[in-house]
Length: 394
Image (spheres, rainbow, N blue to C red):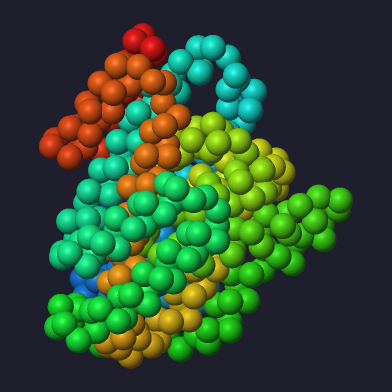
């Protein structure tokens, strides 16, 4: 369905990205690939180059690459309103499933049978995160300096805890990257100049993505908690460079050590549940919000973790070429990506320590890692398989 101007209608965009969100199992590249097939190959709404431009910009901005790319594509199709509709529709299926799993977990999570199931899932989740780290290292760690940044990030995050440590790693890596890589000729080439995008002001995008804040007074006495959830996750989202898995240590330090909204075990279980849902790993924010403030808390946390970076993506879309053409920016992001790979390795160790210290856990970890890296089986299948095996072994 198209509107009178011949452009894709918001309703049809919402329906399209709802289908994309329902079928995007297997990580951020799965969502990007499904979106490329639907938007470019089947409907020819944009070109492959347009989608690549979105991935390029999403890779150098904070937040989940897939959802930020969705925001870019929606912006290119229908401006800021299109970005809001596409992001909301793409996130909705994962949000509904995560909230449902969280509700079941709150009611049944302490049953011995469920605990045994999660004992099998934990090693698999650690393997999923480590496999993501391996893939990131293949792309981001290309020399001794990148390896040094990745190793330093691992050492710091495993020896120290706290959101400030994570923030310091990101800042230090950006400064080191700008110093080490600016003049070595290895920074990636500038992105191509994108085709003209809709002339929507960045302020309009920020307003549209911030509209849920206006609804907080309607929830009465819970408004203070919801505002805190919204602000906390919004702040964290702006520190998440390098994709969803890099966000795991940021989230853990904040919601476990800082705010105490969930325990370390509950956080690990939330990360396990994200592997059973479509969409980004950051949908785990819905679980944390649900534990802290019920359904309204889940909404506040989810809006907080996705909306700021999506709005930033839309605001920066008009300056894609000038932004990415900056040699200093590309060099800094090269350092951040290398450290980000180390942060993901540290997250794998952190989650892995919560698995049962038995030979069966080690066996499940190795099995999951082989399935993910050697046979390239999606995490959506690997995690429940290991959970079922662990149910009988552990």
